Amino acid sequence: MNEKELISRLKLGEEPAFKVLVENYQDRVYYSVLNILHNAHEAEDTAQETFIQVYESIHGFKEESSLATWIYRIAVRKALEKIRKQKNRQRLHSIVPWWMPSEEKNMDAAYLNPGISKENKEKATIIFKAISELPSNQRIAFTLIRVQGMKHEEVSEIMQLSIKAIESLLSRAKENLKNRLQYHYNS
Image (cartoon, rainbow, N blue to C red):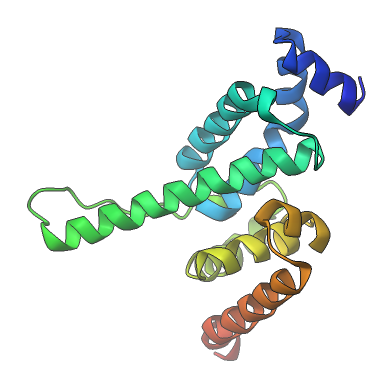
């Protein structure tokens, strides 16, 4: 089934078409948000929320971009929402610690990513931690291009920024990572 046919069938509300959509994109969406959130549980929730949003919003899909780009845009936005909520909870916890329990950030992305060999888990954990400390736009641009292997043009569409802006974010992310990781590689 080609993309046009899939979109048409999705807009008709056909359940088998939605099943095909999920089967085709679930791993890519999951690993994209996992690489942004660095938490398997949060990534699973975000991937599910993404597909619910796709199902509920497919009638509004104008086909100005590819279906994959539209799905990634939703996934990235959902991941950013999770990050904002976490930051708000952390801020609130710092103001009234007795009211909200502390939440530990689980850094398990390196262990769950199938592309990382056992010998490289420790290095990957250090790198993923450094990536997680980048400003959100830098983290997303870096993750989608360097970790997920997307093209600059694709990320430009997903993030709805110019290619020059994406290149700038990527350049700043690399510089920030270089500064953060300098200690680990010079010791």
